[in-house]
Amino acid sequence: MRPAQTGPEVESFYSLSDVTLDHRVCRGTSCFAAKQQNQERWRMAMSQWPPVYCLGKCYASPSSTETLDQPHVEVCSKEAIVLMGVVDQSMVDLASYRSHGGYEALETARQHTSHWVIEQVDRSNLRGRGGAGFPAGKKWMAVANQTILPKYVIANADEGDHGSYIDRFIIERVPHRLIEALAISAFAVGADKGYIYLRKEYPVAQSKLEIALSEVKSAGILGNFEIELVIGQGSYVCGEETSLLNSIEHRRPEVRARPPFPTESGLFHCPTLINNVETLSSIPWIILHGSEAYANLGFSKSRGTKAISLNSLFNRPGLYEVEFGIPVRTIVEEIGGGLRTGDIKALMIGGPIVGLLHPSEFDTLFGFEELRQVGGAIGHGGIVAFDSNTRMIDLLTHEFEFGAQESCGKCTPCRHGSRRIQNLLSQASKGQPLTSREESELRSILDALRRTSLCGHGTGLSVLAASVLEKFSEELQPCFM
Image 1 (cartoon, rainbow, N blue to C red):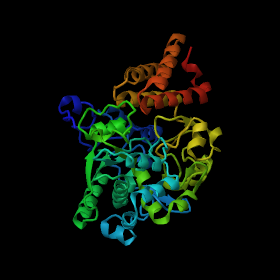
Image 2: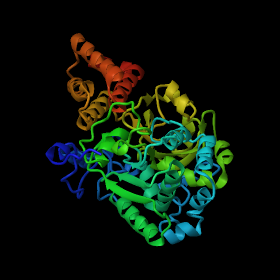
Image 3: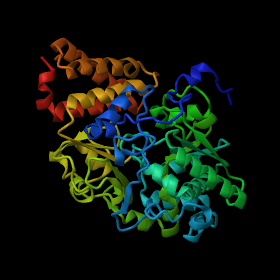
Image 4: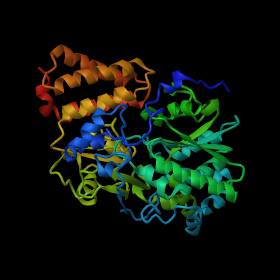
């Protein structure tokens, strides 16, 4: 194990390492979409430095750290899996969690072999809920098959995708489910140490986890398995798993080149399993009810349920659990009740670095491959609607400002390209159309971002831009000479 770096070269990477979160206003995409609802608050967000890009309060945008509203939570699937206990807040502490069957899945797992546990996860067809949708069972198996010790398991709770507040409320209302799931994963792959990497912007979640970890330690539930809570210091890219690894190691959290993948060489160069909070939250249900019961939910290659979070422009913003396979239009018009601010112009599903959906594409079924076919993504599951108040050139400018601010700087196209594109878009948004040479430069940089970025941050920005330029070309025509 190499010695960890310390000092300014690491601390300077983060935007919130020496910043308190009192009186901070959110500048994320959901708040951008709702800026007309409270223009004074939005002006405050734009004037504060450093920016805070998501507080996990997208249901009440534009929001601030003083926003205390709670979201509507509802299960719209046949089974309540990830939102079980989140709806009625009936499992907040250890006693209430155990009274509802908590930690029975861990005991069941321990009564079987690690191979049996991995087989259940694999046969359930559970896919990662953090963005890529990689089969969870395959990832668990890859770590279990490694012979190098020690091994680690990590819960990625760095939920930074704008519009998403799913992980936040799972942790705040059912913290023990995450702990139980992490313990099951450790048993399955042979790890003795686990980490939960939680973003600083979620102080209530931090408090709930600290209490829950203290409870299980006192009760001796985890045995020799140890979980350490690590609090991020303000960096969107730390949601990328290799950057997250460097952050836990107290190194400058730039993205690592892959291969090798974390399953082979992850934390401290040891085999490491990384899943996000929602992915892990399905594990206890799968262990108790069986892989077949889970795989019978959903459709096609997207099985089980998915939590989605709707932003404040909807008539019914909030947190919902749905089965894969329902039309996006059903989410927009029936679950969300349409927009309270008028007609919908575009939809962003899964975060700020994915393609937009045009209203003509709302009959697309909610599934990994199906959304990908129209240039969208499941991503984290946050859904941000935009109305006629949003100009597409302003949205692109906003996203590339965010992209440039949050780039880790490891690769040149993202480090320099995102800032240059932001400047060009800002010029166009102010009524100064780009010349043919500038337009060519913009498209050339976007192509470089797509082809050569080290991680999904740069490639995602290029996907977003390509989507907007194609689907809203008529609106953007005056931005080019």
